[in-house]
Amino acid sequence: MRAETDVVIVGGGLAGLAAARRLHRAGVPWRLLEAGDRLGGRVATDAVDGYLLDRGFQVLNTAYPRLGTLLDLDALDLGWFTSGVLLRRGERLDRLVHPLREPGGAPGTALAGVGSLLDRLRFATLAAGCATLPKSRLLAAPETTSDAALRSAGLSDAIIEQLLRPFLSGVLIDRELETSSHVLAMILRSFARGRIGLPARGMGALPAAVAAPLPADLITLDTPVAEVGPRRVRTRDGDIACRAVVVAVDPPAAGTLLPTLARVRMHSYTTYYHAAPEAPLDEPILLLDGDRRELVANTVVVSNAAPGYAPAGRHLIATSVVGPSAPPEPVIRRELDRLYVRSTADWEHLTTVAVPDALPAAPPPQGRLRKPVALGDGLYVAGDHRDSPSIQGALASGWRTAGAVLAQLRAPG
Image (tube, rainbow, N blue to C red; front, side, top):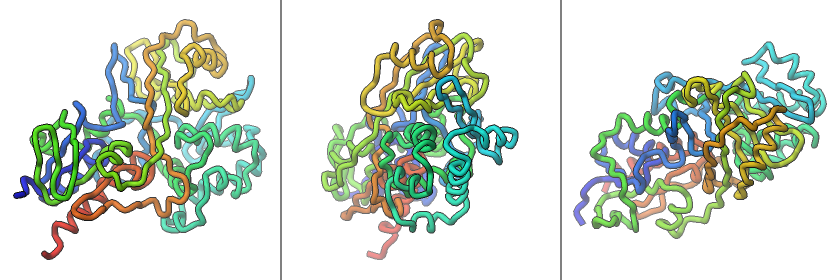
């Protein structure tokens, strides 16, 4: 068949958009096909009655290296979270913060009583090493699970169970902390080096910003792809001939289009959104359950960080639960009564958002977090299941895959 374009990208999530950006910058003809009615994949925001409700609680970390290549962070008008957490244990509420970003909170962090002082010093040493050592050295270290890595660092069961498991389970969507220690090192690196924020217009502003420089006539929405093969893509409207195909859909869909791919297990979580007339906290900070109830991963007053997420005079609270089971909302409300030490009777339940395929599981071995993207015969695969399970992983994978395509197209013969 005569090629109608050089590259067809299947999927308009962050990986597909990053691939399109690099191909477009290189002047290579491309088309992007998206099955849904919008771009962004798992990163989206719904505007409901004056509230901005992300498709599950998500945040943006400014330390992600690929962001600077693809967008102007200042244009997102980010609202910032405190670089730390609040930890509820019975009647006690401890505030633990990044000492360099929140120097005023350093004494309270040192005296928090979570684990021992030696625990806190050892964790600070671990985080500092992840922040300062070259990535190549971190990824060359012996690989194990995140749980085993924390224990190998000399951390006690108390600090792991009361603080680190509650925090990391929400970040990794993995309560058992079976995620690779290499992924953990990159996560700690990003938290130590970057700031955590939300775009003023919701997380959906992120894919919109990545897509903004791309010509709209090269992007086709509402176009499911039924089949891909060497140098062709089949849609309901017929075949599109091309020189290369980039499959940049979520892992389950990628496995359907590319049956030779290894099956990727997915982690899931659920976010409950509530509106309140008064904020239960004045600070934009994650509240964790240190009582090991293993229900709520974290809860936060989102509108404290980004006021535009709620109408004037109202406040938006997001509460996330890790795992495939979503408890009834009244169960969550009782947990929030306990965590915030106040009645939530006057809160309005706006919606519950289940995200069944939130992040790909990344147990060891993950190696250097770069899985092959070239499958042969002009077929390529991109997504956070090819790099680290994160926004950075999706963007980096799309960019890297486009580089592999460019190398093929420019190769002699």
